[in-house]
Image (cartoon, rainbow, N blue to C red; front, side, top):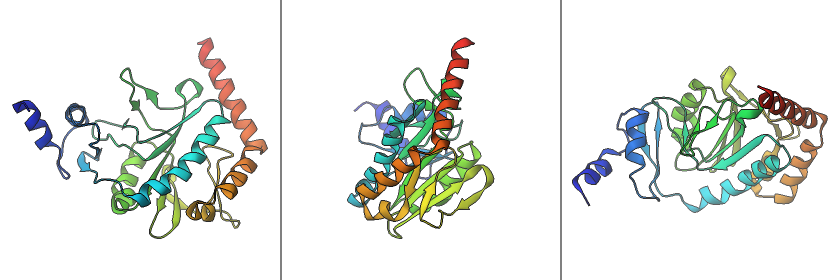
Length: 230
C-alpha cells in the first residue's frame, strides 16, 4: 500500500469533521465493502450490517420497487450515495425520488451518484438507531428531504416524519401509512414488521388503485412532457 493510500484509510474515522468534497475524494479510494457517511460535516463509519437489518430492509425495499414499477416517473434504490450539500453525503438504506425530468429536485451526476434531495428516504434502525432518529433526521430535514421513514427493528415500529413541517406523523386508524409525497404508496405497518408479504402487497395494490395515484401519474407525465418541450 502506498503512503497516499495509507493516509486515506487513516483519515476516515467516525467523528472526523470534513467537507463533502474531501470525504468523497477519500471514500472513493476505500475498499468496495467499506461504508461511511457524512452527516452534518461529521464522518460516521458503519459497522457490518447484521441479519436483522438485512431481513427488515428487503420487505420495505420490495414495496418501493413495486410502487416504482407502476408509477412512471419515479425511481427507487438502496444503499446509494446521495450528495446533499457541501457537508452532507449520506448513503440511505432506501430512497424513492421523482425523476428530474418529471419535476423532481434530485439528479444523477456524470459519475452516477445522486445529487440533491430525494423526496423520500428510509432507514432500517438497528445498531444505527440513535443516528437515524437524530443526526440523520436533522440533516435530511435541513437539506430538503420531504418525508422520512425509520423502521425501528427492536421496537417493531415504523416511524414516519414530515420533515418539511418538522412533525412526526401517525398511520391511519387502520394502521396504514399513506405517504403524502407519493400518492398510493400505502404501507401496512403491522404487516411490515411481521414480514407478511401477502398483506403488504394487498394494501399497496389498494393504494395503487386509488384516483390519487392515477392523478399523480398524470402529473408526472405532464411534467415530463413540459420538460421535453423546453
